[in-house]
Length: 151
Image (cartoon, rainbow, N blue to C red; front, side):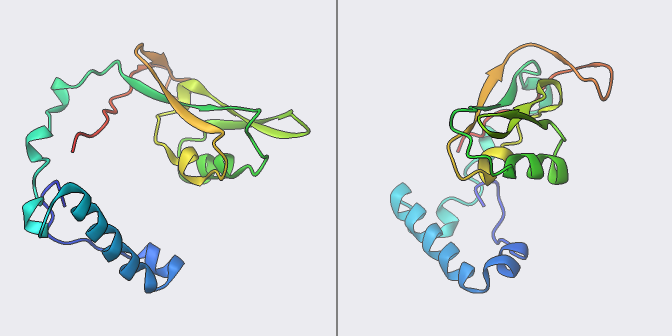
């Protein structure tokens, strides 16, 4: 909405959590608006538009890469499943700490944050790297273009 949308569409969340999720989303939006001092949605719709940059203005050498702390890993393997089924196949599993431990394949990681969203421990984090990375999949130098949003 801060990028200009005047409505939102929800499908998978309703299928997963039921219609109650809509009430939770309304509560969450209301709490966020109170925190930010907004009285109505039209107060913030499009507010982030001045922050949008042309891709040529971005630092193309900036890349976020996931990190897994093996000491905090509980062995759920959710990050691995998410990476292989829904992302960039950048998390391999190796034996360690009595269970298989996820290991990030740096050149394939695009910093999508999916591993951090699915793990139940604080094992996954991100760090930035400011140099081109050679991708084994594409065989060429690739640089992340991900920029943290400003709202």
